Length: 399
Ligand SMILES: [Zn+2]
Image (cartoon, rainbow, N blue to C red):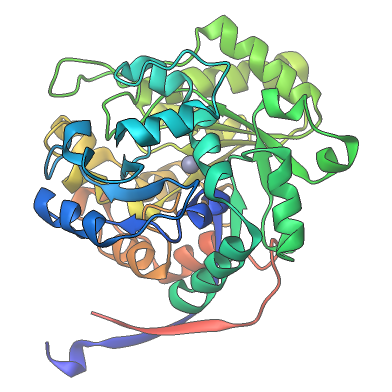
């Protein structure tokens, strides 16, 4: 590449508004196979790795559009679990399964049932996080976010357990996160822990990677994904969350789920007249109409620039309208008037975390229809000093 084409860019450190630091920290000594495209290479990497007693080797970042894996492939190894990139899919061997089931004693586990998996995803991920998570790993993880990935702050969207707060305290990292938890978990927390909770997390649908995001136009299989709740169930759950006086963050990826959530929040704003902050997490396939109504209802969109590449990674399963309509930042900003840093904020969901992919996919998304963010918009949405103060900057070369 001609050096004169390269431009150097200096921006503040990132404040990641949606990720799962405790879960990823608990996996820090696992294997990331995001860049691996053959099954044999994954198996070779697992073979080389020693596993500590009482732990499960976590392999993550697997893209099932590149190759398939089965529990049989993992039979000869110690306890091993392979998560797909979206975290909404998992393959593990018998030893890992026995260990994780011993943490989920009140669940009747049906691992091959995707609907069961989606419904219990939160509890399953929490069980994995609690098994391997500790203050040392958490400190090393935040250190690598800071030093290697340009991220100074990482919001915890899925508190695994009340004990997780103690681990953050022990690691001296309470100021570099905010905790979100399920209503179920909230009800078990002590008053002191409740003070540290930013808000409630609700899942309205699944994910693109496993075709469970609730969509209007079908996936390649003819499926339309799944809504986690009926309208009335979601309304009741939302009302209970609002009653905690905390913020509410609702995961919705597909247009069908986003419509359901936006309609509910819009109605409830009028009926209940609450002031709580409400966020939609991901909002990848949001339509123009839903975006207008979301803005009217005072919804903050918490989006992941690094999900723009889903248009490539999942082009095998998505209809054309979603391939080009995924992460429609220009529509949101130019046509609807969302403002980065105010009602449009950015995070990574850890898939992957860090400035490199975030900036690359923001400035040069895979399809021209997606249109790019400007550097100023990126910084406003991703580097908000009011959530964590730091003057430190990162400098890097742009292609
Ligand atoms: Zn998430």
